[in-house]
Length: 229
Ligand SMILES: *[C@@H]1O[C@H](CO)[C@@H](O)[C@H](O)[C@H]1NC(C)=O
Image (tube, rainbow, N blue to C red; front, side, top):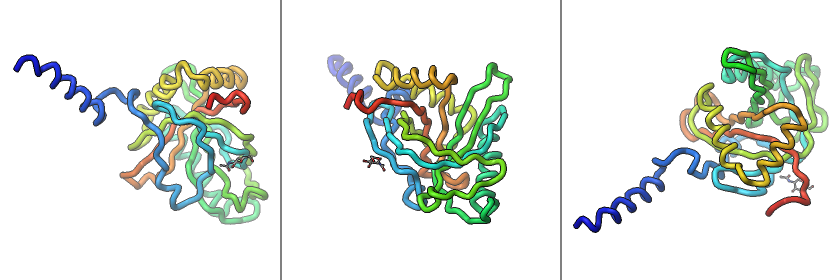
Protein backbone atom coordinates (compact mmCIF):
# COMPACT_ATOMS: atom_id res chain seq x y z
CA UNK A 1 0.00 0.00 0.00
CA UNK A 2 2.84 2.36 0.77
CA UNK A 3 3.57 2.71 -2.93
CA UNK A 4 0.21 4.39 -3.44
CA UNK A 5 0.79 7.18 -1.00
CA UNK A 6 2.84 9.44 -3.24
CA UNK A 7 0.25 9.01 -5.96
CA UNK A 8 -2.56 9.84 -3.56
CA UNK A 9 -0.60 12.76 -2.26
CA UNK A 10 -0.06 14.16 -5.72
CA UNK A 11 -3.73 13.65 -6.52
CA UNK A 12 -4.64 15.46 -3.35
CA UNK A 13 -2.31 18.32 -4.22
CA UNK A 14 -3.75 18.65 -7.68
CA UNK A 15 -7.28 18.64 -6.27
CA UNK A 16 -6.34 21.29 -3.75
CA UNK A 17 -4.87 23.47 -6.45
CA UNK A 18 -8.05 23.13 -8.51
CA UNK A 19 -10.36 24.21 -5.76
CA UNK A 20 -8.32 27.13 -4.71
CA UNK A 21 -6.28 26.32 -1.63
CA UNK A 22 -3.09 27.51 -3.27
CA UNK A 23 -2.03 31.14 -2.83
CA UNK A 24 -4.23 33.71 -4.53
CA UNK A 25 -1.56 34.70 -7.03
CA UNK A 26 -1.60 31.30 -8.68
CA UNK A 27 -5.28 31.56 -9.57
CA UNK A 28 -6.60 33.11 -12.70
CA UNK A 29 -8.35 36.19 -11.39
CA UNK A 30 -9.90 37.61 -14.52
CA UNK A 31 -12.62 37.14 -17.07
CA UNK A 32 -15.72 37.78 -14.95
CA UNK A 33 -18.19 40.22 -16.46
CA UNK A 34 -19.22 42.53 -13.60
CA UNK A 35 -22.94 41.73 -13.01
CA UNK A 36 -23.95 45.41 -12.52
CA UNK A 37 -22.94 46.05 -16.15
CA UNK A 38 -26.00 44.01 -17.18
CA UNK A 39 -28.19 46.65 -15.54
CA UNK A 40 -26.37 49.94 -15.96
CA UNK A 41 -24.04 51.33 -18.58
CA UNK A 42 -20.34 50.54 -18.32
CA UNK A 43 -17.64 51.84 -20.66
CA UNK A 44 -17.02 49.23 -23.33
CA UNK A 45 -13.55 47.84 -23.95
CA UNK A 46 -11.66 45.42 -26.12
CA UNK A 47 -9.90 42.50 -24.45
CA UNK A 48 -6.36 42.42 -25.76
CA UNK A 49 -5.07 39.46 -23.75
CA UNK A 50 -6.07 37.26 -20.84
CA UNK A 51 -3.00 36.03 -19.01
CA UNK A 52 -2.47 34.10 -15.81
CA UNK A 53 -3.84 36.41 -13.15
CA UNK A 54 -4.28 39.46 -15.35
CA UNK A 55 -6.30 40.82 -18.24
CA UNK A 56 -5.20 43.52 -20.65
CA UNK A 57 -8.00 45.75 -21.92
CA UNK A 58 -8.09 48.72 -24.22
CA UNK A 59 -10.58 51.51 -23.57
CA UNK A 60 -11.28 53.98 -26.35
CA UNK A 61 -11.15 57.68 -25.70
CA UNK A 62 -14.15 58.82 -23.62
CA UNK A 63 -15.33 61.49 -21.20
CA UNK A 64 -15.16 60.90 -17.44
CA UNK A 65 -16.08 63.07 -14.50
CA UNK A 66 -13.93 63.18 -11.43
CA UNK A 67 -13.45 64.83 -8.07
CA UNK A 68 -10.44 66.99 -7.28
CA UNK A 69 -7.73 65.33 -5.21
CA UNK A 70 -8.89 64.04 -1.85
CA UNK A 71 -6.40 63.61 1.00
CA UNK A 72 -7.23 60.73 3.30
CA UNK A 73 -5.58 57.90 5.16
CA UNK A 74 -8.29 55.56 3.89
CA UNK A 75 -9.28 54.61 0.35
CA UNK A 76 -12.66 53.51 1.62
CA UNK A 77 -13.18 56.91 3.28
CA UNK A 78 -11.97 58.85 0.23
CA UNK A 79 -14.21 56.81 -2.05
CA UNK A 80 -17.23 57.59 0.11
CA UNK A 81 -16.39 61.33 0.13
CA UNK A 82 -15.88 61.37 -3.63
CA UNK A 83 -18.88 59.22 -4.41
CA UNK A 84 -21.23 61.58 -2.53
CA UNK A 85 -20.03 64.51 -4.67
CA UNK A 86 -20.51 62.51 -7.85
CA UNK A 87 -23.90 61.30 -6.66
CA UNK A 88 -25.06 64.91 -6.14
CA UNK A 89 -23.87 65.63 -9.66
CA UNK A 90 -25.94 62.89 -11.30
CA UNK A 91 -28.95 63.86 -9.17
CA UNK A 92 -28.92 67.27 -10.86
CA UNK A 93 -26.46 69.36 -8.83
CA UNK A 94 -24.79 70.66 -12.00
CA UNK A 95 -24.94 73.73 -14.21
CA UNK A 96 -27.87 72.46 -16.33
CA UNK A 97 -29.68 70.86 -13.36
CA UNK A 98 -29.71 67.74 -15.46
CA UNK A 99 -30.21 64.26 -14.08
CA UNK A 100 -27.72 61.74 -15.36
CA UNK A 101 -27.84 57.95 -15.28
CA UNK A 102 -25.41 56.23 -12.98
CA UNK A 103 -22.71 54.17 -14.67
CA UNK A 104 -20.22 51.65 -13.34
CA UNK A 105 -17.54 51.29 -12.19
CA UNK A 106 -16.60 53.98 -9.73
CA UNK A 107 -12.84 54.37 -9.97
CA UNK A 108 -10.66 55.47 -7.08
CA UNK A 109 -7.19 56.44 -8.23
CA UNK A 110 -4.48 55.96 -5.64
CA UNK A 111 -1.34 58.04 -5.28
CA UNK A 112 0.29 56.47 -2.22
CA UNK A 113 1.71 58.70 0.51
CA UNK A 114 5.31 58.59 1.71
CA UNK A 115 4.99 56.67 4.96
CA UNK A 116 2.69 54.48 7.04
CA UNK A 117 1.06 57.41 8.81
CA UNK A 118 0.91 59.71 5.80
CA UNK A 119 -2.25 60.63 4.01
CA UNK A 120 -2.52 59.37 0.49
CA UNK A 121 -4.11 61.22 -2.38
CA UNK A 122 -7.17 59.90 -4.18
CA UNK A 123 -9.45 60.96 -6.97
CA UNK A 124 -12.82 59.37 -7.57
CA UNK A 125 -14.36 59.25 -11.01
CA UNK A 126 -16.87 57.59 -13.27
CA UNK A 127 -17.62 57.24 -16.94
CA UNK A 128 -20.14 59.71 -18.40
CA UNK A 129 -23.04 57.87 -20.15
CA UNK A 130 -22.96 57.80 -23.93
CA UNK A 131 -25.93 60.16 -24.27
CA UNK A 132 -24.10 62.83 -22.24
CA UNK A 133 -20.60 62.32 -23.66
CA UNK A 134 -20.91 65.14 -26.22
CA UNK A 135 -22.14 67.73 -23.74
CA UNK A 136 -21.62 66.75 -20.10
CA UNK A 137 -22.98 69.42 -17.72
CA UNK A 138 -20.20 71.24 -15.91
CA UNK A 139 -20.32 71.46 -12.14
CA UNK A 140 -18.41 73.52 -9.64
CA UNK A 141 -15.68 71.51 -7.97
CA UNK A 142 -15.76 68.60 -10.40
CA UNK A 143 -13.55 67.96 -13.39
CA UNK A 144 -14.76 66.78 -16.77
CA UNK A 145 -11.96 65.02 -18.55
CA UNK A 146 -11.62 63.47 -21.95
CA UNK A 147 -9.37 60.47 -21.40
CA UNK A 148 -7.37 59.39 -24.38
CA UNK A 149 -7.50 55.79 -25.48
CA UNK A 150 -5.71 53.75 -22.85
CA UNK A 151 -4.55 50.24 -22.00
CA UNK A 152 -5.34 48.81 -18.59
CA UNK A 153 -3.94 45.78 -16.81
CA UNK A 154 -6.68 44.36 -14.60
CA UNK A 155 -7.02 41.95 -11.71
CA UNK A 156 -10.43 41.05 -10.31
CA UNK A 157 -11.31 40.16 -6.75
CA UNK A 158 -14.54 39.49 -4.93
CA UNK A 159 -15.95 40.56 -1.58
CA UNK A 160 -15.67 44.05 -0.18
CA UNK A 161 -12.88 46.51 -0.90
CA UNK A 162 -11.07 47.31 2.34
CA UNK A 163 -8.01 49.38 3.13
CA UNK A 164 -6.23 46.12 3.90
CA UNK A 165 -6.83 44.05 0.77
CA UNK A 166 -6.17 46.57 -2.00
CA UNK A 167 -2.40 46.84 -1.69
CA UNK A 168 -2.16 43.04 -1.63
CA UNK A 169 -4.32 42.74 -4.75
CA UNK A 170 -2.28 45.44 -6.50
CA UNK A 171 0.96 43.63 -5.58
CA UNK A 172 -0.48 40.36 -6.89
CA UNK A 173 -1.36 42.05 -10.19
CA UNK A 174 2.13 43.49 -10.41
CA UNK A 175 3.61 40.02 -9.72
CA UNK A 176 1.45 38.30 -12.33
CA UNK A 177 2.65 40.80 -14.96
CA UNK A 178 6.32 40.25 -14.19
CA UNK A 179 8.39 39.31 -17.22
CA UNK A 180 5.69 40.34 -19.74
CA UNK A 181 5.91 43.13 -22.29
CA UNK A 182 3.05 44.79 -20.38
CA UNK A 183 5.15 45.15 -17.29
CA UNK A 184 7.77 47.16 -19.22
CA UNK A 185 5.08 49.36 -20.75
CA UNK A 186 3.55 50.01 -17.31
CA UNK A 187 6.98 50.89 -15.92
CA UNK A 188 7.60 53.30 -18.80
CA UNK A 189 4.23 54.99 -18.26
CA UNK A 190 4.93 55.37 -14.54
CA UNK A 191 8.27 57.01 -15.27
CA UNK A 192 6.65 59.27 -17.82
CA UNK A 193 3.80 60.41 -15.55
CA UNK A 194 6.04 60.53 -12.48
CA UNK A 195 3.99 58.58 -9.95
CA UNK A 196 3.28 55.02 -9.02
CA UNK A 197 -0.43 54.74 -9.55
CA UNK A 198 -3.08 52.14 -9.55
CA UNK A 199 -6.82 52.48 -9.31
CA UNK A 200 -9.56 50.48 -7.66
CA UNK A 201 -12.72 49.96 -9.71
CA UNK A 202 -15.94 49.10 -7.86
CA UNK A 203 -19.14 48.14 -9.63
CA UNK A 204 -21.49 46.96 -6.90
CA UNK A 205 -23.70 48.88 -4.54
CA UNK A 206 -22.38 48.78 -0.97
CA UNK A 207 -25.52 46.85 -0.01
CA UNK A 208 -25.02 43.91 -2.34
CA UNK A 209 -23.29 41.05 -0.59
CA UNK A 210 -22.93 38.48 -3.36
CA UNK A 211 -21.70 38.60 -6.95
CA UNK A 212 -19.28 41.38 -6.08
CA UNK A 213 -16.58 42.08 -8.65
CA UNK A 214 -13.86 44.60 -7.88
CA UNK A 215 -10.84 45.37 -10.01
CA UNK A 216 -7.35 46.75 -9.63
CA UNK A 217 -6.48 48.85 -12.69
CA UNK A 218 -3.02 49.81 -13.86
CA UNK A 219 -3.34 52.14 -16.83
CA UNK A 220 -0.59 52.54 -19.37
CA UNK A 221 0.28 53.75 -22.84
CA UNK A 222 1.15 51.23 -25.46
CA UNK A 223 1.99 51.56 -29.12
CA UNK A 224 -0.42 49.33 -31.06
CA UNK A 225 2.27 48.24 -33.52
CA UNK A 226 4.14 46.48 -30.68
CA UNK A 227 1.20 44.31 -29.67
CA UNK A 228 2.53 40.87 -28.74
CA UNK A 229 -0.71 39.11 -29.68
C1 LIG B 1 -12.49 51.32 -30.27
O1 LIG B 1 -12.16 52.02 -31.44
C2 LIG B 1 -11.74 51.16 -32.51
C3 LIG B 1 -11.28 52.07 -33.66
O2 LIG B 1 -12.22 53.06 -33.94
C4 LIG B 1 -12.90 50.24 -32.90
O3 LIG B 1 -12.51 49.38 -33.92
C5 LIG B 1 -13.32 49.45 -31.68
O4 LIG B 1 -14.43 48.64 -31.98
C6 LIG B 1 -13.63 50.35 -30.52
N1 LIG B 1 -13.85 49.53 -29.33
C7 LIG B 1 -14.88 49.67 -28.52
C8 LIG B 1 -14.93 48.73 -27.38
O5 LIG B 1 -15.74 50.51 -28.67
